[in-house]
Image 1 (cartoon, rainbow over the protein chains, first blue to last red):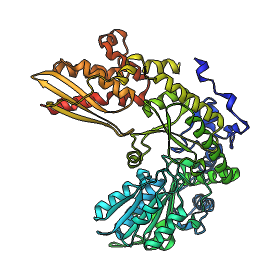
Image 2: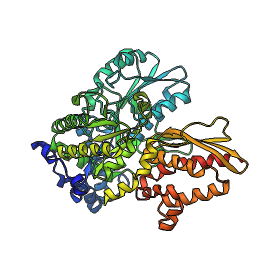
Image 3: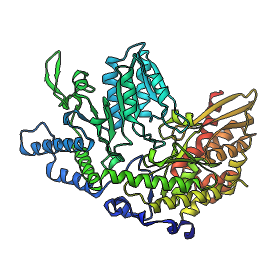
Image 4: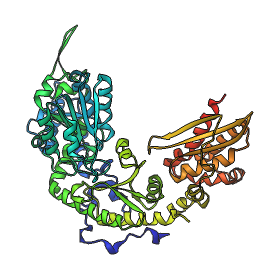
Length: 421
Length: 146
C-alpha cells in the first residue's frame, strides 16, 4: 500500500531542508524513510560525537586523576577540557561548579539528597509545579514526606502555563526548595524562569532549582544569568551519549553541602575514623568518571555552536507552528498546551478523539513515524489535563517540514482506521 | 508489509470489541476482583469475577485502555464465562503463548475461536503488555479467591 506511505510533498516548502543535514546523523542517514519525532526523549547523535568518543578510546583512554604516566595525564586533560567546553556552552563561568552526573534525574536526586536531607525540616515546605517531569517531582515529594514538610504543587492557568499568581502565593518564608522545569517535556511550555526566580527571591530564601533537561538542547541557556541556585540537564537529549549529564550549583552551596556519594576521587584524606573531601568538582564525583560521555557531550556542544542556538530555536518554533496548524486541521485532533508556538520548545502534544494514544503511536510507527505515547513521566500533569496519556511529537535540528507533513498524513489515516462505524 | 501487520493487529473483531466492549460493568457481590495497571501508559482496568463452586458464573471489567487492552479484556470475559478454574488456567496459558508468538500453528489458533483475533499482537512486542493486562488481572483475582 505504497500510496498510503507517500509523503505529502505538495505541502513541503523550501524550509523542508533541515537546519542540520540528515547525513550528519548516521542513524537517520541509514534509514531515509524514518521520521524520528521523539527527540524530547532522546536525540539522535551526530557523527562528530561518535568520532570524538572513538578518538578518546583510540588515543586517550586511561583512568584520569590516577596514573603517574603520560596516558593518564592525557585522559585527565581530555576530561577537564570537556568540562570547560560544556560550561562555556551553558554560560557558566566557574567551571568547577559544573558537576557531572548520569543525567538530570541523578542531578535532581543529588540535590534532594545532599542538600535536602540536611536543610529541610518539619514545618518547612517545598514548592513544585503541575508541569514537572517525575524526576523533578518525586525526589521532592519523597523528601517532604520523609521530613514532615509540606509539598505544594502550583497549578497551571487555562493556557497550560504555570500560574504566576498561584506560584507567588505558594512561596513563603518557610519554603526551603522551589523546583520547576525550564521547559515542560510533556507540553513544551517554556517557563518564565527570570520571573519565577524573582518571585521566589522576594518571598524568602528557598533553594531555587531548575530542571533544564528540555531547554538546553533547544534554547540558548545562559545559566549564570538565570539567577537560579541549581540547574540540571542531560547530555543525551542534545546530541551527546546516554549516561552523562550534570548540574550547575552555586559555589557557596557546593562548599557547604555534604557529599552525595563516597569513594575514590572524592576524598582528600582518609583516616581510620574520618575523612576529608576533595575540592570541587571532585567532591561530588565519586568513582571513575564517565570520560567518554564528557568528551562526547563536548563534541555535541561544538556541533550545536556550529549550527547556532538562535537558529536552532527559530527552526524549532517554525516546525512547531507548522505541526500545530497541520494537526489542528485534522477532525478529532485536540492539541494540549499553550496556543502560541513561540511559547513552546519543539513539542506538540495531542489527542485523537476515540483513539487511544498507544494505538495512534503503533499506527504511526507502521508509517515510519516515531512518536511517544503515554504519560511522559508526568502523571500529575496528565491528571491536571484530565487525560490518561497523550501522543507527543518532538523536534530537533534534523527535523523537517516534510517530517511534519508525514506526521499529519499518518494521523489523518489513523482516524479513518479507527472511525466509529 | 508493515500495513499487513497493522491490519492483522487491528482486525475487525478487535475494533468492534474496542468500540463496544462486552461485559463492561461492575458485578455486585462479586466473589473477587483485581486491578491491572500498565505503568508505561497509565492505563488501568478492573476485573470482577463471580465464582460458583469451581465455575466462573459471571465475569466483567471496566477501565481505561487502548484498543488492544480493551478488546482483549472484552474477548476474555466472553471466553472465560462458564469455564472451570482448570479450564481458565489452560486458556490463560494458550493465550499467553499466542501473544508472545510461541504458538503460531493455524490449527492451534483455530481452537481459540474469536480469541485468535489477538494473534496479530505477537508482531508488536511493545503491545503484548496491553493485550495481557486483563488476563493477568483476571488470574490474580482468581488466585486471590482460594
